Length: 71
Image (tube, rainbow, N blue to C red; front, side, top):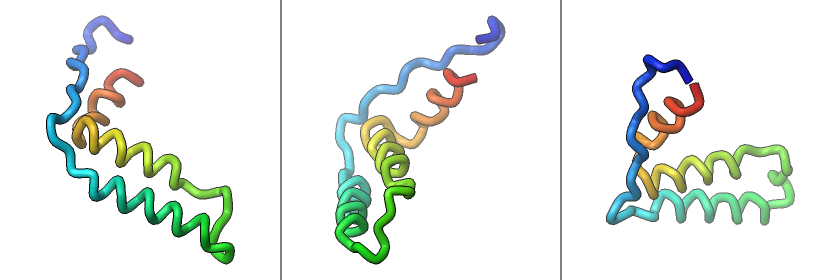
Protein backbone atom coordinates (compact mmCIF):
# COMPACT_ATOMS: atom_id res chain seq x y z
CA UNK A 1 0.00 0.00 0.00
CA UNK A 2 1.36 3.41 -0.91
CA UNK A 3 2.50 5.51 2.02
CA UNK A 4 0.47 8.53 0.88
CA UNK A 5 -2.76 6.53 0.72
CA UNK A 6 -4.99 7.38 3.66
CA UNK A 7 -6.09 4.36 5.68
CA UNK A 8 -9.77 4.21 6.41
CA UNK A 9 -11.07 3.23 9.82
CA UNK A 10 -12.56 -0.25 10.02
CA UNK A 11 -16.35 -0.21 9.66
CA UNK A 12 -18.36 -0.96 12.77
CA UNK A 13 -21.24 -3.38 12.92
CA UNK A 14 -24.63 -1.69 12.82
CA UNK A 15 -26.50 -1.70 16.13
CA UNK A 16 -29.80 -2.62 14.49
CA UNK A 17 -30.12 -4.40 11.20
CA UNK A 18 -32.92 -5.04 8.74
CA UNK A 19 -32.66 -8.71 7.83
CA UNK A 20 -35.42 -8.67 5.22
CA UNK A 21 -33.15 -8.31 2.17
CA UNK A 22 -30.87 -11.08 3.45
CA UNK A 23 -33.83 -13.31 4.24
CA UNK A 24 -35.26 -12.70 0.77
CA UNK A 25 -32.08 -13.57 -1.11
CA UNK A 26 -31.55 -16.68 1.01
CA UNK A 27 -35.12 -17.79 0.25
CA UNK A 28 -34.56 -17.04 -3.45
CA UNK A 29 -31.50 -19.29 -3.35
CA UNK A 30 -33.41 -22.14 -1.70
CA UNK A 31 -36.19 -21.75 -4.29
CA UNK A 32 -33.59 -21.69 -7.07
CA UNK A 33 -31.86 -24.92 -6.03
CA UNK A 34 -35.23 -26.59 -5.55
CA UNK A 35 -36.19 -25.84 -9.16
CA UNK A 36 -34.58 -28.57 -11.25
CA UNK A 37 -35.31 -26.75 -14.51
CA UNK A 38 -33.44 -23.57 -13.55
CA UNK A 39 -30.76 -24.87 -11.19
CA UNK A 40 -27.12 -24.95 -12.22
CA UNK A 41 -24.09 -24.76 -9.98
CA UNK A 42 -22.71 -21.98 -12.17
CA UNK A 43 -24.53 -19.03 -10.59
CA UNK A 44 -23.65 -15.99 -8.49
CA UNK A 45 -25.92 -16.57 -5.51
CA UNK A 46 -23.01 -17.17 -3.12
CA UNK A 47 -21.45 -13.88 -4.20
CA UNK A 48 -24.73 -11.95 -3.90
CA UNK A 49 -25.59 -13.47 -0.52
CA UNK A 50 -22.15 -12.50 0.79
CA UNK A 51 -22.60 -8.91 -0.46
CA UNK A 52 -26.04 -8.61 1.12
CA UNK A 53 -24.79 -10.13 4.38
CA UNK A 54 -21.86 -7.69 4.59
CA UNK A 55 -24.11 -4.71 3.84
CA UNK A 56 -26.66 -5.92 6.39
CA UNK A 57 -24.05 -6.14 9.15
CA UNK A 58 -21.83 -3.14 8.28
CA UNK A 59 -23.90 -0.91 5.96
CA UNK A 60 -23.40 -0.12 2.29
CA UNK A 61 -20.20 1.85 2.94
CA UNK A 62 -18.39 -1.37 3.90
CA UNK A 63 -17.28 -1.67 0.26
CA UNK A 64 -15.44 1.65 0.44
CA UNK A 65 -13.31 0.16 3.20
CA UNK A 66 -12.86 -3.18 1.41
CA UNK A 67 -11.92 -1.50 -1.87
CA UNK A 68 -9.53 0.87 -0.08
CA UNK A 69 -7.71 -2.08 1.50
CA UNK A 70 -7.51 -4.00 -1.78
CA UNK A 71 -5.59 -1.28 -3.61
